[in-house]
Amino acid sequence: MSEQPNQLKKLNAIITDSELAAELRIKAIQLIGKMGTHEALLNLLELAGNEELILEERDLALQQAREIIMSGH
Image 1 (cartoon, helix red, strand yellow):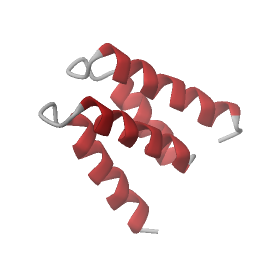
Image 2 (cartoon, rainbow, N blue to C red):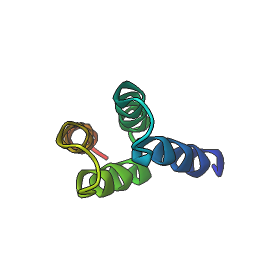
Image 3 (cartoon, helix red, strand yellow):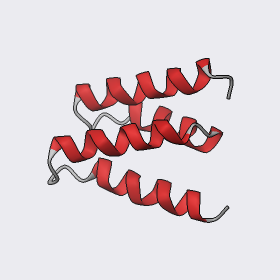
Image 4 (cartoon, rainbow, N blue to C red):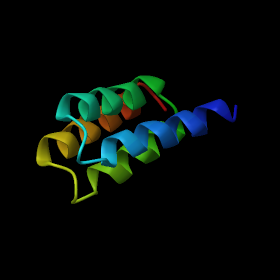
């Protein structure tokens, strides 16, 4: 169980590192969305509210969060 929070932390670090390529940050957001857990949902909502991310990344985080909600989590 502790592996998933560590994975979320690593993916979150990738997403918030503005020096990394946008494609890599977007892929990390998609990976969090595929986790489909409550923790992933909360993380995505936090990312959607992060004004330091570009609009496309924030919108994708919100879309991924919406998909988790629609799946029943």
